[in-house]
Length: 97
Image 1: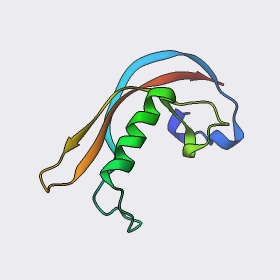
Image 2: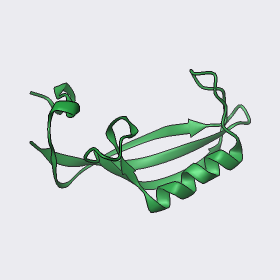
Image 3: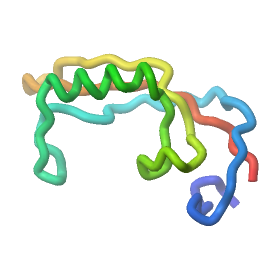
Image 4: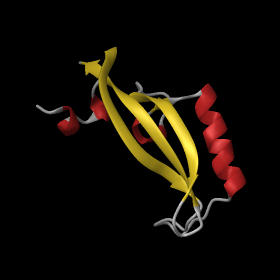
């Protein structure tokens, strides 16, 4: 079974070690999102600041669950359309059932 097929709500995981796989992406921006929400640049900066004290990636934003990975780098960048985006690089953990 692939890890992506597991239902994390019904399983307990133990973090074994970082597996060295990096994921890069945009986690937020000042543009209007699919829920019709818009963050301000100040809110985006606050999100970035919060990553310093809590860099862990949680399943469904639930900090009571075992973290799936850790943000190892981030920066706010200006996008081509004049908005701002919070870019991250994170590493995934090897999870053992």
